Image (cartoon, rainbow, N blue to C red):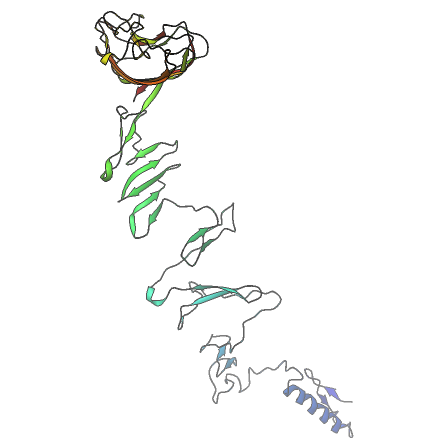
Length: 420
């Protein structure tokens, strides 16, 4: 009976026996060798470490130093690295069983995507490999050499947020933009929007801060210059920055007192008007009285004493009493609405007027204004201008006292403003 070789089971005839079987053994062994050579049976277990073939490159005519691991032509050296460029010849580098494909440079080495006729590019395809997004290096003309580093961590509220730029260069952020300090204008680096402190935003031009909003809503001009309470901004014109300035003379009026007539009253007083006030504004809004007659006023001091002296008069005889005599010679009041002799405010008809008082607290307070009302004689509507001055024999005015020759004021509102 024959025996078999260990690796490929080739048959070995028994020495001195198997006289008529040797031919069959030889034929079977030749078939197995043929299968090994044509690849039908894998070649395994060959040890050539001690043979002359060791170190001879496949395809070369002479031996070379090293282990038998070198392919000449398209050169691949599995132990010492490539000896020439490696072409995939149109094929891909792939893995199986969901394995990763790792590129692992040594030490400080990098994975470099080289350029050729174009800049180096990486294309990230969709799952169907029918669409892709390309990452491209700047062209050679840009002389660009820099590093783009990804952040250490994503935001906690919107981890999928991205930054997108359209074909026009307009950029859209998918979430909040966090800046350490400032936004700088391209090509104009001394113009910026800054965040110089917590809860504070400032604006710079020409390298200098122009204004800022601070944590409590304060408005700072030229830095953290917030002015003082009650100050107002004053324009510097077309060539200078605004500044903080004390209020006054700016043409704005501040309401200091208001009287609402909700039931019958015989008089209205505005008290504790501190002197001096550059200018006061007195407004009558739809004021009515219960009978046809005058609406009058005068000045009083803190002791409620009348201060209109014997030299009081009405400019151009605009104010008259019922008899037609001018308001002068001891009269203690001015008539607001009786603007021509014998005409009175019609009872039940609303009276509206505005009067400006200047020089308050001086010896010659001046007032002027316009009143609109219906008169008693012809039941016509009138709009009358009025001017008058009053002389104080003594004392300081602190009150304006308003009353009617009829019985009562029956409705309306009266406002007192001061110029600020």
